Length: 356
Figure 1 (cartoon, rainbow, N blue to C red):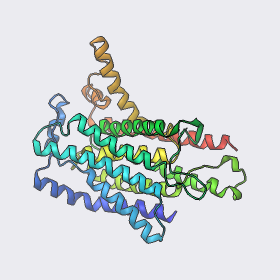
Figure 2 (cartoon, rainbow, N blue to C red):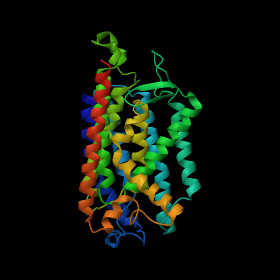
Figure 3 (cartoon, rainbow, N blue to C red):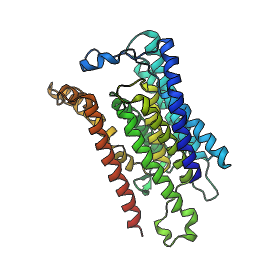
Figure 4 (tube, rainbow, N blue to C red):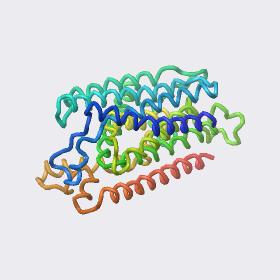
């Protein structure tokens, strides 16, 4: 528990004081955001706002995790290291994309193939490594079984698992990227998701099968390799994003850019895979899924019928064009995300209780 508290508090502190320093550095170098010409007119004022702010909470998360371990004299786990590796690796791909946008002075960064290749390399490395490093009970960080609240069904094998893991990583990282279109929207939603995973990790640790001899009902335990450390990672991310939100909320002083959105999406997917809650991630990250589906529906409808379902995709811009203010869209979407987290945690608890 002390690790979780320290990680969250340190992450919050570091981004609160570190983000304004990053803002000054990026502004001095002229690393500002480019705005789409076909977007809502109100977004024109955002042009030039420093971007690549994801650097702040990525570094804060890594430092918070490390300091929490030093302060509590606890050793890092392979699951925690893998989740942080996926976050940092996806963040690096996003950073290259953002940097090219700025240097080339264009709204598109990395070529689509190069960006996809980077995501595939990082995701594949994570997926392969997550099936290694079995502990003394033979439990690896990830499982080749599909999972909802816990593992279920049969093993899909290592090859299909890598493909499945890549799908989840790419879907969630690009989902967060699509959501990051309004001040504070993606950051606030991510805070809620990581808060949920902090609770889930702590609960899994308390009801771990590794301690089945002390449980009243061993059949209701969780077979997760390092649940407490996943809670520490989630807490560090939650605290870091919370501090970043102070500067990212409307009117934003800095944007996270692809650096931040790809990192957050990768972290969510990584924690979901390692905590054996893969399908539950769809509920907990419901806002990201909803916004991603709006783009899929828009593109599919236009290609098949030549008509658009929404005035503009992603979904948040549809409501802006209907006359909603940016702050109104963000707050209402946060409410939707909060409801998704509540439902997800309810499903998680109900799934555990049903096994008793």
